[in-house]
Length: 251
Picture 1 (spheres, rainbow, N blue to C red):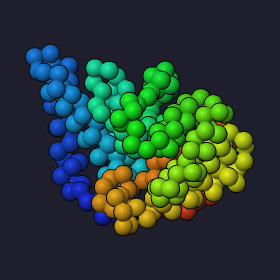
Picture 2 (picture 1 turned 90 degrees about the horizontal axis):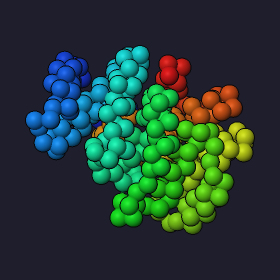
Picture 3 (picture 1 turned 30 degrees about the vertical axis):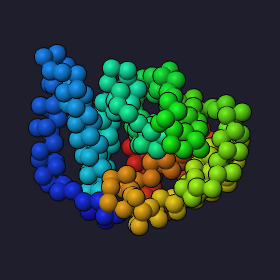
């Protein structure tokens, strides 16, 4: 089993119990005799169980099963993030797991729905402008292989002036990597991924990611690596336990 951070689950129990939980909760999603809140809770549970299984199988080095469960989670995660009836509150940081998972594991139809959603946050949910601007650009490039040039320039200008450590060490490199994809600058794309991975590694060892599933894989870096391959045929050369490039061969 991969030992990546301090994230711990009883994987044997999870794998035994989750399919039962998922089937029971799936039936509740469309059960009109339940309140909307109860149905939302069921939807959330199904999405989270599938995601937990995806991470669990990855850590158990069963990559095919990992991919399957990430893929199964996507329709439910999409509803929670983007469909008005089911929408749960998100901020510009918390939405990134959902965005990256849809871009990595979602169907073409889901990606099309993602760009059509014209996703935006209310001002009170924008806890960091640089992160929010990055999220918007990630949706653009992940679904269309293009970005609005003015939006990219603005995001870089805003983020490069910000003092926040997480922005400087993570968001700025990710934005520069996107710029590399748009300008066909392979070096800038690669350097951005490497710097983002270093921030992620620090967070997974000693920071907020040290004992949660989000620390297991740097999804932002994996998405950018996939985009480099899909847009330009580039192969990412980063070597990091947080960047499972072998998963890209199964997507």
